[in-house]
Image (tube, rainbow, N blue to C red; front, side):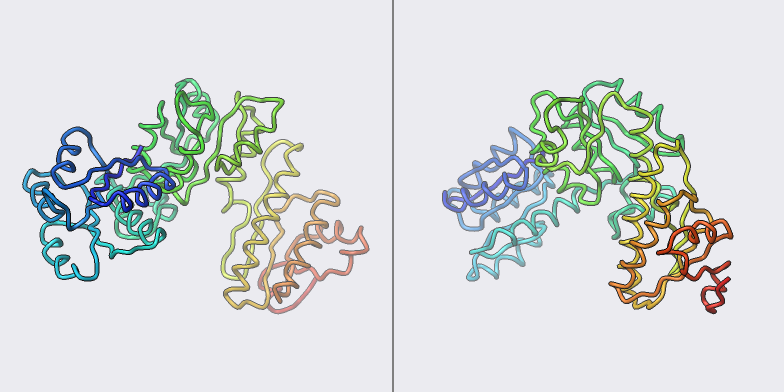
Length: 381
């Protein structure tokens, strides 16, 4: 668990800061002056220090100077008032990472803390593969973070082994048997999906998800749970999880998981205003999941096209599965979505698609183009 030390002689300030720290999912510890602060640092390690300037016994600059002289490089945010602005320049020379003016708003303190913790979380690591770079966070510090597709936190090692057996060989996975080691890994790696056992010993799932959200805001958080008569999905969503995967893992559940979180580019590839639908791969009873996911992706892609000021979109259905009713229904819904965005939808498909659309009154008159080039020119078949 990330730990933040607040050093301030004002009990009121420490109370406010402690509340903010705990709400963010961090552990808070306190000291009333610089000497007490140095003592705490000898007793335990911390990830960030919030340091007041004016204090009895030993003030903030004095504590900071002794910290740096001893080689302690813990990030520091200095708390100061308007009348103490002149001190900031000297504090910068001693090695503070940022400062905040009193009185401050809670959201301002949170932003400052996350900026420092986010920077401190990057470490020197081996270069990422070229294929992973596009999925990693942006910014110069992100280049040092190692990318992993799935990060697993479960105290039973067999869970990770079973999951690894079911994931495609090209996907990367890292596993940890405790919340502490998992959190430490999340400071060094960037994960696309984080999977957590919902019954880790002596761990609050709600607190853990809050910490992971702060460290990995881009990741999807999935709980791993046993089947139960209770509404587990609802309970876990209230704890902050995005989704649920039941144990033991079934082939269908893993298939749905892969489609939802890793096959986005295969299901719908968007190049400017040309959307190409990918083929369906899997058991026939999973076809509803395919169309459900495709519809979600298409709605999001339409919004992107509208934002880019395209007034028409070419939808290439050449590889789409020809399923009676499902594909026509998807098209009708998407055409309505396009109209709401002020976009004309032009369909590209095969003669088989033309025959399928001709079976239904609602789709029989839809223009169909053989190629994207024909769609651009408006030459329907």
